[in-house]
Structure formats: C-alpha cells, structure tokens
Image (tube, rainbow, N blue to C red; front, side):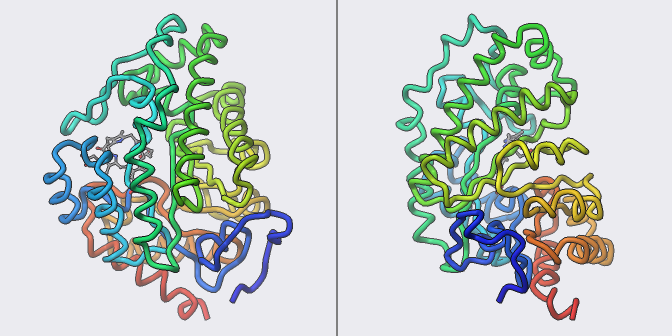
Length: 362
Ligand code: CP3
C-alpha cells in the first residue's frame, strides 16, 4: 500500500485503476517505484529486429497494428515493465499533416523541409484522424492485450521538437534553420507551431479515446532555446495542448519531458500544466527532489549508457536515483531512450534491482 500521498487525488483528479504507474503519477509515494524505459521497444532486442524485418520499413511497422502491438509487448514479456508505451514515432504527426517522410537506414528521419509561412499551405490537419487510424487501432488492441496491472502510455512530440524536425528536414546539431525562422519571424513560425499544437492535441485525444491511460510529450530539443524563447515555444504550446486535453479527459495524466531544460525545469513544472516531469540524465537528483518533486511527481533519469555499462556501475547509479527519489512520487526511467547496442541482459539486471528495492532499502 502507499506510504503517503503528496498530492491527494481529490486535488489532482487523476484516475489510477490501482495501477502502480498511475498511482505514482497521481502523487502517491508507492511501496516500490513503478518503472518503464523510454525506447523500451527497439533494435537492442533481437525479436524487434526480426519483426522490423518482417514489416519492411520502420514506417510500415508504425502503421501495421498487428506488428506494432507485437513490438510494444516484446519488452514487457522479458522484463514486466509497469507501463507499455505505444509503438509509433513522434514524426507520424508531420507525416499525417502531409509532409514527406522517410527513415533512411543508419541516418535517421528525412523530411521535405518547410521553411516559411508561405509553405504552410502544403500542410493540413484535415485528414489527421483518418491517416493515423492504424495508430489508434494499435492502441485499441493494446488496451486489451496488456496485463491488468500494466498501464498504457500514448505519446506525441512537443510542438517545438516536431517543428524542429519539420523545418530542419531531419536531425540537427545547431538548429540554424528553425531558430533563425523563429527569431526572425515569430508570427510566421507561430503559425507552424499553432498547426502542430492543434494536430498534437487531436492526436493525443484520439489515443486517449482508443485506450491510452496516460500520455507523454517528448520535447527532445527543449534545451537548445534561450529562456524567453523556451517560454514562448516550449512552455506555451505545451500549456495549450494540456489545457485542451484536460477539458475532455481530466483524469488522464500528462507527463512532460523537456529534455535538457536545466534550471528551466522549475518554470516548466509550474507553468506548463503537466501532471508529471520526465527528467533527463543531466538533472541532479538532489536538486530534483527539492525543487521539482515537491511540486510534481518525477520520472527518470538513469543515463542510458549505464545500461550499456551494466554491472556495478549500473547498480550503483540506479541505487543513487532510487535512494534520492523513491521517497516521493516517482517513476523510474532512463534520462533518454535505450540505445541500440544495449545488452538485453543489463535491462534484466536493472528490472530485478528495481523490483527488489523495498527489500534493499529496508
Ligand atoms: O519508447 C518506445 O519504445 C516507443 C516508441 C518510440 C520510438 N520513437 C520508436 C523508434 C518513441 C516514444 C519515439 C520517440 C521519438 N522519435 C523521439 C523523442 C525521444 C527521443 O529519442 O529524443 C524522437 C526525437 C523521434 C524521432 C526519431 N525516430 C529519430 C530521430 C529516429 C532515428 C534515430 C534512431 O534511433 O534510429 C527515429 C526512429 C525510431 N523511432 C526507431 C524506433 C524504435 C528506430 C528505427 C528502426 O527500427 O530502424
């Protein structure tokens, strides 16, 4: 049973179904921290590589409900995470808006870039639900396929990060195109953000209607903006999406993951309207316990490379996080996604350590 409750459900209004993961997000300090791992389904698992080969391309896999369900379940079968995350990608939203998208082997995503307000007429949200119907079908099938105690997470990218891919045309080191557009022409860039805000709220709403019990907004590139622009392009659009979701689905928790936001995590925590904070690897856990977990439940933040290292390095890094954060509402996770060359047995080592935590800490 729960030891204490930092934020009573009467206050948060979040539903839990008795599931450990949802209880932590509603503000409970749980008997053992629930856990899941960002990118828990993926190329480090041989069974993922086999299903991926069967599907053809990565996008074919994302739009094939039968195979997308299969890869979502693969890590749960091995490690029994407390939450399953829908297998999909943040870039299905620009794809559904009409942007050309390909994943090139070894190079990551490539999009046909949008670089001015004049080019926005190439994009439209009018067919979003139809185009993403296979994703919602995957969610529907998952909600009956996962174990009873496991929660189902839906997700989307945050507008800033999705817009960065849309404008750069893929990954980037300096974000020169997207930043120069946002700084030079905030009104024009704001029109792109508005389009993505609407599409994201629609996409997350549809996932919730199909059975997602919590949603996470991935803002992988939140940390590259100066503070005023962080407020404008990270916090504000997130706040609008959360407000829209809360009108219709007040009981469904929203986790915000403004990666590498540094001290701006503290502003995001109180202004974005999210119910929980995903912490990246660089956030010091002592500071998080004092400055963030006193406001919202937190999730994170083991360095994914500790999972590559394994052994004593992995064990002591995981124990440090558990010691500092499991005294409040907390979900154990990584600070970013599982990397491709992670030995699957190290994930097993971590899962066993988290599951034994009450014994270890007694
Ligand atoms: O976490 C999960 O298990 C659910 C599935 C998931 C994927 N991508 C599958 C995926 C989730 C939640 C994402 C989010 C995502 N996608 C983000 C935000 C998180 C982050 O990593 O910062 C971003 C930025 C993307 C965009 C994206 N998709 C990139 C940059 C790449 C290429 C990099 C890479 O690892 O290849 C992808 C492809 C992708 N998305 C893969 C997977 C399993 C690998 C594709 C393959 O099988 O070839």
